[in-house]
Amino acid sequence: MSTFQKNCVTATIILFVSYLVLAMSLMYVIQQFLLKNEERTLVRYCKTIAKSYSQLYDVKNLYSIDFHKIEEEIKILDDYTSMNFIVVDDQFRILVTASNSIASIGDNIEEEIFNQVMQDKIIITEQGLSGIFNEQVFAVAYPIKIWDKVVGAIIVSTSMPVIHGNIKQISTLVVLCLIVSCAISMLIMYTFTKRLSRPIEKISKGAKFFAQGNFDKRIEIDSNDEIGTLAKCLNDMADDLDNQEKIRTKFISNISHDLRSPLTSINGFLQALRDDVVPEEKRVHYLNIIYDETKRLRKLVDDILDISKVSNKEVKLNKSVNDINELIEKTVKTMLPHFESKNITVEKIFESEKCYALFDYDKIHRVLYNLIDNAYKFTPENGIIKLSVYSNDKNKYCVSVKDNGIGLKEEDQRRIFDRFYKTDYSRSVDKGGSGLGLSIVKDFVNEHNEEIELHSAHHQGCEFVFTLEKANQIEE
Image 1 (cartoon, one colour):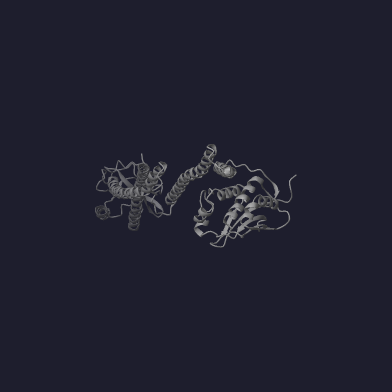
Image 2: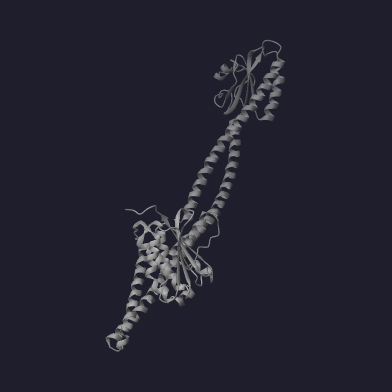
């Protein structure tokens, strides 16, 4: 069963139960209202008639009254009000009777309720009076008092079948209205549920499409609610997966190319040496080329292993307190031949003679080497590379590597840390680079829970700045 069907069934059950309870409650309220209204009407007539009798009374019993005249008046009320009127004296003898009464004038009535009425009580009943009326009635028995003495009673009644008929008619009308309301509600519910389920169906289809590895389509839902947010998240996920797939494909392509180039060179020179076609004076030169290509292969393999460890969360840091100034000096010394080949000046500006920080020595050495090597590649001859260490407002050391090369365009700056990304300019300057160096730099800095930033402008050089946690002294 689909989500739409489940929602429809659930909503239908809820509507049905709700309207059923509402219908039963309304019918009960209507019945009580009509009975209470009839009760108030009957009591009002009783009071009116009892008051009239009291005003006509001039002796100590009711027989001095002209009952024929009163009987005619009651019959008129009987005809026009659809109510029945009976008057009895204190001996329970009928003085005036209703048209639907089975008792006659002068008959004695033995009903328990009259004993209560003679005790000056108002009795409202739906039961009894079977000895007076030939149908079930809703009646009020009201005492007639003369000089604070109960001398008789008046019974005003209305037919219960008539009341039940009125209740039935009103209840039927209410039920019909509720049925129409329920139908309209179900139609609105169906429309709303369909509208709500449609984006869910789109999301379901989109998720299945993504699960099959197809990332060229997106879920088209334009709303600002939770459904829209979910669709946007899935689309963002598809974008990320698509990018990862492209990176993976590009990774394989780049690795294949980067491995093939040195292997081809090594294979060609080794074959020439094996066939003894290389002049003796060039053998050392060719062996040096093979050695350089081997170093390049090793560096590439090391980079790939580092990337793999970072991706698989396998990087383990061995942090200790070290002098970052000393590490910079050591890194620069290993690269002096490169600087001298291009007559590059290296300026070092340290905040103090010793700047102790907490970091993994090997990882940060790799970070410094890659950043300084990157600066060397893009610094022109007779250029300047500035290395500095200073404190920031967060009580951390900032390590800066700055060159005066060509700099980076804004679009290149956003992707400079992406794996295998190389700018158009770097492809011509650094043909042997793999495009992994800066990615590894960012990964190693992030593993230290530190930050690295790039400040650059086209034709104004580049400055990479990363932070390290300060330490007070060398650990023993």
